[in-house]
Length: 68
Picture 1 (cartoon, rainbow, N blue to C red):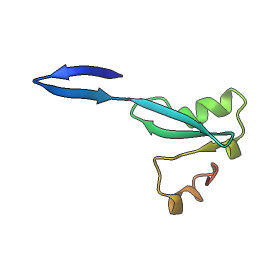
Picture 2 (picture 1 turned 120 degrees about the vertical axis):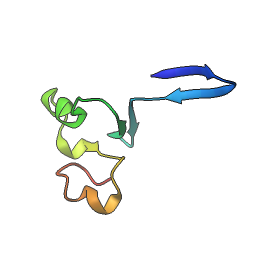
Picture 3 (picture 1 turned 60 degrees about the vertical axis):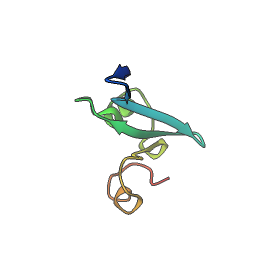
């Protein structure tokens, strides 16, 4: 995460953003090399409880993860 000020401009850059919404883990952003969806599965989280929120809803149905 990069937070602060540069040349009188606010800097806020989040590399990894996860939310819990209605009991599901939403991956909102992943700018890391880690495949966070797979890492969550490896820790025991079912695929149907992970939403790839950075993907358009019409694409999610092909991801193997939850749609919403």
